[in-house]
Length: 507
Image (cartoon, rainbow, N blue to C red):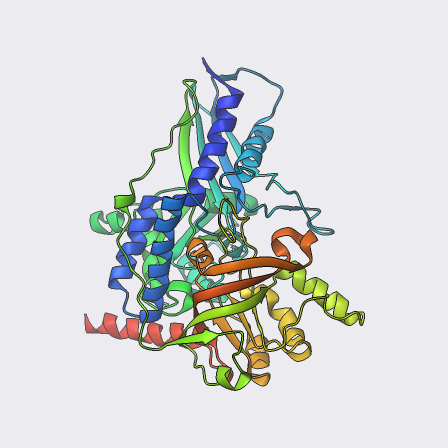
């Protein structure tokens, strides 16, 4: 019989969540490096360079890889012979206590993103609890823990379907993936759960993402099981779509496909697909009664020495005096280095602005969007001498329903976020001669280094969703939608899907 101390379990949860906030799994880093080296699309290669540089910076600085430090998902497998030293807390409560401590750590505070009353007030719980805990009782006298911090941008793209028994799973994945857009921040992984019931398939998909990246090893030795054959089939077909890094078009959309399956009803074929983003974060440890888990610290020399170089089509722009006429000369695909002042705002701020304008109250005091840019971001709190914590972009698509209002009523000149915009929003951008600029998702610490000043200007009660004014210097972005409506998230994947087909035909 093994006795596990509650404190050891709680400490291990806390340590693991801090650890994964700034250390990418090295298998993922190596997979992205391999994709970076073979990538032929300059825009996608540039995005992966920023992801790799950001990863190394986060490892060095012990600061979050991504500003969205995620919802905690924890798989706990408890041996039947395990005993606890105390019985005053449930496993859920212990995971939540470790989560609370990790997310409120003063040396590396993580962004609290969990809201209670999700169908109503959606009030932030302030400490990122409760976590999502899955408990299994298994043979043995040890505890196995797999824990992840899952960002909202990728989690929101999860898909589930009840296929007919004769339906082709790979065909469904290939048909469905393009509908997910780029908000899940590729290159990443797809976790696929098959069988059981609807909810079981979803849990299997999430658990599969805890496994290491090993698709290249599988390709070398060859598939033996049904799952392995399906992994290889989906891996090739998904990358042949040409979606590419950040949805810009390219050779690599996924670095691995993970699959878990269980038996199901003869009339059913439940399938769930959950993507993992460029901020892939998970840890795996065991407790045997000897103390807290010890996580192996990776060596900085294990990260690739990648540099980000300014290309020939770069524009340097001072947002403090840029004119609408100048913005209209920018072309989709251009790289722009932004300097000067911008405002921020995301879901809650946009909703409040809409309410104030609909009521006739107008914009909050001190907020003027005329000829200015808005950055869709919810930053991590600053520590030490930081101006702001990691501050990467959030998914722009969620702001689509507010965009026409913002462009028509506020004089807004442009928006900065990640991923694509919907067709109606692209039309609105063209109608108002505005632009949408894309920053790289999964490069939040790198982006924060371009922010030289930060202050809250409105809605302070919204916490990370308040409106800030950032003063930036040489913040890199890509013109994703220009003032004529040219859209790289539509043209890029289409071009590269064709190029990949040509490369395949030439083999």
